[in-house]
Length: 89
Image (cartoon, rainbow, N blue to C red; front, side, top):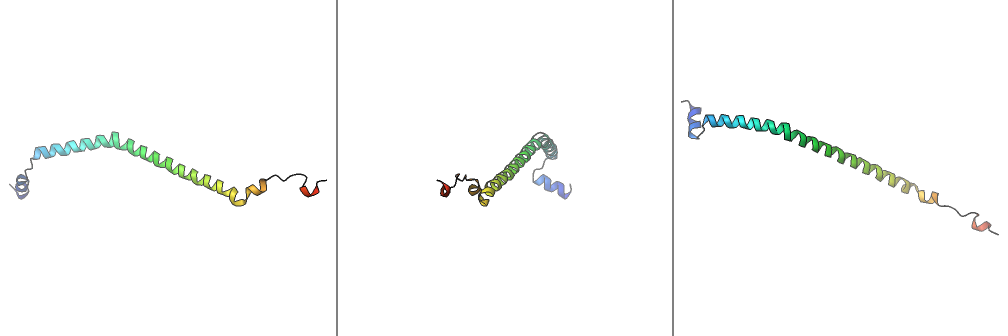
């Protein structure tokens, strides 16, 4: 036996089991990647996109609400009585 074989034997490595575990791990990883990881990642990406759109919409609404108040829209839209009180008979 060579040195690697002696070390593997000392640590109790049984090669047929190790190879079977590696093959099964590869199969399970492939199945999860194909049927679990892709849909979950797609769902998370869609959620991230919707959150980003919501933040953009919130910023737009905030700008719209701040715009008229900053320009004094209330003072411009107040109806003045007609005729002015000083010109009443």
